[in-house]
Image (tube, rainbow, N blue to C red):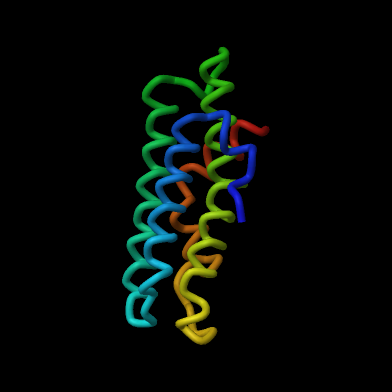
Length: 128
């Protein structure tokens, strides 16, 4: 499926989304059940790193307070958590599900929640 249009306004998210989709498209040609778990772990690690960097950037620049830049960054953070991650995870699962025979355990909801914890806390605190 095409990426959600809500990911296009923040250019860094659009680039990240395109990179993930291009990678998964290449993997789909040679997806092996043996690759699902290790690549799932790498994918989770990349999500965690991205979430941490987004949260750290907001904290370091004090973007959690006010201002146009803060609102734009928070919008990008929210789009990452609420739109990008579910979309990218779904694409990852659909890349490996046919070859893993339904045994794909990577990217369960607990693992995703743990990977996104730094950013989820920031997004939820800003909503209050």
